[in-house]
Structures are given as structure tokens and as C-alpha cells.
Length: 112
Length: 113
Image (tube, rainbow over all chains, first blue to last red; front, side, top):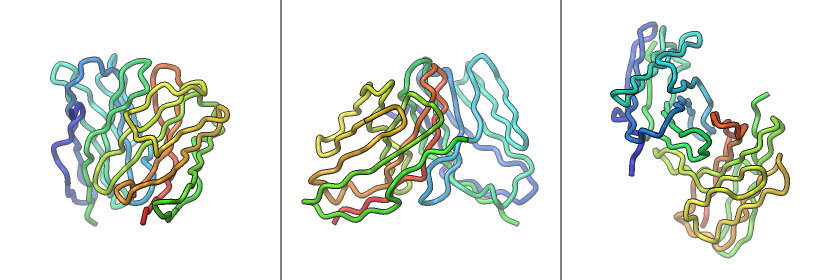
């Protein structure tokens, strides 16, 4: 049962432009959402998170938007840099529940 | 400091071997996790320890045996594995305070021959 979905397996963006990665979820109990970045053969690196009481969280070039009614979140990276090229995983959890669910990931390629 | 360390980085073992994966964190986190990740797939949760007690076991075969000796250490004991168990094994930890940002280690790349 895929409770967290990333429907785009890959995304290619020109350096300096905006990258938008999307994520949908089905479980209405989820109230905490995270984005992780992963390079090959390494562990996921925490990037940014958002609680369900907010609809936007910003950290430097990274902004996460949450639309609870649509059960949708997105990660915006602007401006995109070649070093951002990696696989990005969306994840979600419910309060006091350690069982975090991951999406399938989106491979972002930022071209110079 | 958000570092989770894992040893070894790589492990090759036969199906009759017994080996252990180790994970350590010194962030004062009270929840620790084992995940398995196959190529081009998301991490899959295997076990969760919360305050040194096993709280989640996602129907993992008994050839995988977790152990949490103390709040900083997490082991995964491996015995009689199958070639399909070859994967990247990731350890993570979190504060166990409700909002669970998990911090991951670099993983152990396991190959079962």
C-alpha cells in the first residue's frame, strides 16, 4: 500500500532555474512531512520538513509547500545548482508514530 | 552534530555466515531504526527501537535479529541470509518526541553470495 507517492521518477532542470518536486499522500493521519536527498550508496540526508499546522516552510533555496486538502506537498529549489542532482525522497509520519513512510523518489538532474 | 555512524561500510557474506551490522549515534536520540533499501527503491522500515525497547517489527524474517544494547547503539545480527537480502542497510535515529525527523547513517552495503 503506497501511502506516499512520487509520480515523477525523474526531473531534469537547467542550472539557475526552479526545480519543483511533487509528492502526494493518502493517509489523513500524517501530520509531519519531510524531504530527504540521497546520493548513490549513501544514506538519505534530511533536507527540510513541515508540520501540518503550516502550509509553507522555507530554508535558504529550499521551500516546502503543503496543501492538506489536496494531500499534496511540493519541494521548490531555486535557483537549482548542479550539486542538487540527487534522488529526492518525500516522507510522512503521524504524531508519536515512528513508522515513517517514504515515496519512491524522484531523480533530479540539474544541467549546467 | 547530526551524525549517525555505521560499520562496516561494505560486507560480503555467504549464506551460512553469521555477521553483525553496527550503528551508533551520540545525539541523545531515544528512537533508532533499521531500514533496508534495494536499488532504485525507497527505504523500507524493518525495526524500530524506542527507549531501548523494540516497538515496531515490520514482519521481518527471523534471520535478521535486532539488538539495542543501550540508547546509543543498535545492532543487526545476520544469520543464514539469502542472496535476495543483498541491499543497502540503513540505520537512523530520532528524538522520539512526537515529530520524528530521522537522521540516517551512510549505510552498510551487504552482498550475500
